[in-house]
Length: 113
Length: 117
Image (cartoon, rainbow over all chains, first blue to last red; front, side, top):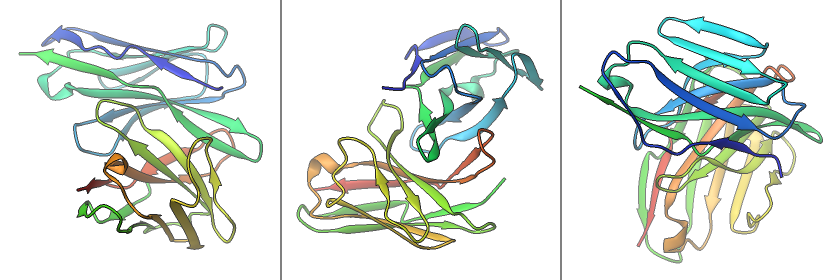
């Protein structure tokens, strides 16, 4: 069973702090990794994707990937109350014949004003 | 990114009836679409992978006779929940993917909130 694991939270951080969200995955052959944000009752929206080991920065967001440890994380700097949402880690895994998106359970983030 | 339109956004139906959900890819030809279900406070669970012109591939535990998927064109896939029951009440989301091998980005529809009473 191919899995993606996340701490469900909630993770509470004060406004302006750094929020750190973590994700581990079981399929060592996975090559692409995505972070989505989902507000209650809405569809997920893509924040970042990362394919290579190391860090990738986009504005206040930094994704970190360590394939050896099968670990991907998302850092949110200068957290704002509007960042309060559920953050889903997704891993694109190859199943015979096709690629599939497998999602983690999501981490609920609360940014306290 | 691609635009995916999903309808209806919200539907309430009586137990035993069927409900059809449409997922349209508006600006590119989607050979593959994915259907997810999400229960409250849970993650998206992949139900099936829909390939244009062929039968859908269902995930383990998903009843293919209950969740009928049709992907007759490159821009439209439908999910029909047959003989719906209250336990089928959930948030259903479709997505298309621009397949580039491992580097595939998914684009999601707006989701359909199904309530079976």
